[in-house]
Image (cartoon, rainbow over all chains, first blue to last red; front, side, top):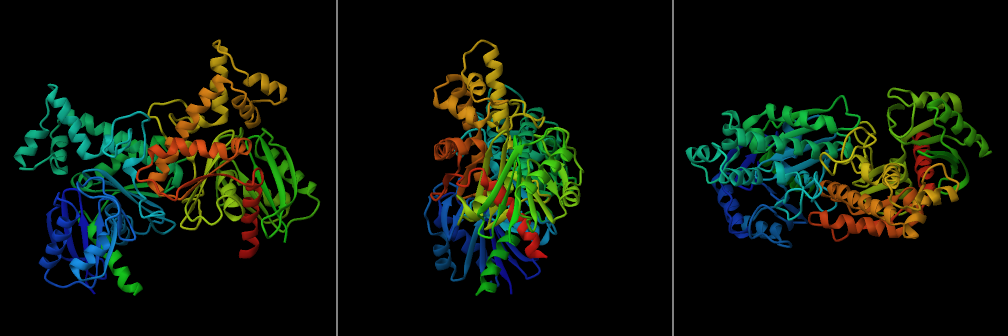
Amino acid sequence: MLIAGVDVGGTNTEAALVNDKHRVVARSKKPTPKEGPDAVIDTIRELIDSLKKKPGAVGVGIPGAVNGGKVITVPNLPHWSAGIDLGKRLRTSLGLPVALGNDANVGLLGEWLAGAAKGADNVLGVWMGTGIGGGLILDGRPYTGSRGAAGEVGHVIVRADGALCSCGRRGCVEAYAGRHLMSATVRAIYQSGRKTSLFKIQKAEGKPQPTSKVWARALKEGDTLAQEVFATGINTLGLGIASILNVLDLERVILGGGMADRMGQALADRVGKATRPWVMAPNPALKFVAARLGDDSGVVGAAALGRALISAA
Amino acid sequence: MLIAGVDVGGTNTEAALVNDKHRVVARSKKPTPKEGPDAVIDTIRELIDSLKKKPGAVGVGIPGAVNGGKVITVPNLPHWSAGIDLGKRLRTSLGLPVALGNDANVGLLGEWLAGAAKGADNVLGVWMGTGIGGGLILDGRPYTGSRGAAGEVGHVIVRADGALCSCGRRGCVEAYAGRHLMSATVRAIYQSGRKTSLFKIQKAEGKPQPTSKVWARALKEGDTLAQEVFATGINTLGLGIASILNVLDLERVILGGGMADRMGQALADRVGKATRPWVMAPNPALKFVAARLGDDSGVVGAAALGRALISAA
C-alpha cells in the first residue's frame, strides 16, 4: 500500500508517495508558508492532492516537537504555539489516518530503514539546515524520549555564557552551526566592512536568504569570511556531538539536511575530524557518514510512521 | 538465591550479599587499593569471603568502562590499562560466574530496581563522587551503549577551551564538578592566600583527602571558598545535564554518589534549579530526586547483573 510521507522543513514542505520497500514513487514540493499551522495544513493537503493517488495513511515530520498529536514547540516557524492539536486538524483536513513526528527524528528513521544508517544499532542523526536538528536510534530502535522531544542536538550547550541562540538560551550548538545564525553572523561582519561573496551568490541564485546551496558555493569558491564562520560552526558542532557520544557510546553519526545534501561525505568527514579529539575512549567502530537519501530521508521516514498506523490497526 | 554485588569506587570497595528482593543481607567494605587490577581483585575476594555465605554469582561495578569483560578505560584508578581481561581474572580468582559493569550504570540500575528511579522509563543517574559518573534508563530498560561505555555525564563538554579535566580534554563537567578537581581548585586558591576550613575539617575527620563528608561539613559551616567552588560545580553540572535532557527528553534525574549521600534532596533540588533554565521545552513531569539506597545502590545494581547471569543460564 502507498503511504504519503510529508516533511515540513523550515524552508520547504515536501510530500511523497512511498511504497512498502521505502521507495518514493511520486513527489511534490512547495515553500513552507509562514502564516502558521492552518496555512501549513492547507499546503500539506494541496501537496498530497497533487500526488494523484490517494494514500492509505499519512506521516508528517514537523520542525519541532509533538506529543500525542499536540504541538510542544516549533522553534523555527512563526505563529506556532504549544498545545495546538495538529494531529486532529490534519486528520479532519485530509480524511486519512495521520501520524506525526519530529522532522529530524523521521529523517533519521528514513536513513535507518533505507539509507546510511541501515544496519547500525546506535546512531545519532544530525540535520544541518536552517537550524540543527537530530534524531537517535538506540539499542536497535528509534528513540524519541518521554514526550517525543528527543534529539535536539542543536541545543546541546557547548559554551557557557556563549552566543545567543534562537531558542532564547546561550551557547547552544545551533547558535554557531545553524545556517540561519551563521548567515546572520556573516551579514553582521559584512556590514562592519569585511568582504564576502555570500550575498552576491544568494542574489545570483535568486534565493530569499543564503540557502545551503548558496553556502556550499561560497565555501567552494574560497570566501574567507564564510569559511571562518563555517569552521567555527563545525568545531562547535563537533564539541556537541562529542558530548553526546560520551553519554551514549554510539557507533554511527549520520550527517544530513541541506548542508549535507550539497557537501556530501566531505562534510561528514570534516565533522568527524572536529568531533574525535573530544570523544572519551572513542569506539574504533565509530563512523561519520553522509545521509544517502537526500531530500527523501524525511518523507521516507514520515511515511514509515504513517505505515505503522495501518499495521497497528 | 543470594548474589554478591561489588562496587569498586575511587575511594572504597564495597561488597554485599543481595537477596532476590534486591535487599542487602550482609555487607563489607575496604579502601580501594591503588596498585592496579590484581590488588583490586584480591580485595574483592577478601570482601566476598568475609560475607561468610557463598553467593551463586558475582556482579562487579568498576569506575570505568568494560566491554565483554575487558577493560576499555578506568580513568580514576592508577595502573589500569585498556585490554585487561578483568572478567576472566575475576572468574579464576573467585571460582564463580562474574558479570561486570560501570559503577555508575549499576548504581542507577540499583536505584531503578529498588530506589529513587523506580517506575520511571527515561532516567539519567548522576553520581557525584571523586569524579562524575552517570547511567541511563531509556524506554524502560538500562542503556549502556555500543560497548558499555555510555553514561559519561562527567565528560559532557560545557565550556569550549575550558578548564583541564582528568581525562586530558578541556571544559568537561567533571573538571568543575568532580570532587577531586573541586578540592584541587580550593587547594590552589588556598595556597595563594585565601582562607578555607576545608583542609582543617579534613584533618579533624582524619581523612587522606577532602571526602564528600568533609565537603558537606565545609559547605554547611559556611566556608566561602568551598561554597564558591561548589556553586561553579553545580552550575556547570546543570548545563551538562540540560544538554543531555535536550537530547534525550527524560522524565527523571537521580543524584547519587558521596555528595548526594551527605546532602540528600537538597543537592537534587539545587542541581534541578541550575539545570531547568537551560532545558528546551522542559517536561512538566521532570523531577530531580536524590538516590535512596545510599552506598547500597552500587552493590544492589551489581548483584542484579550477577543474577542475570544465573537467570540466563
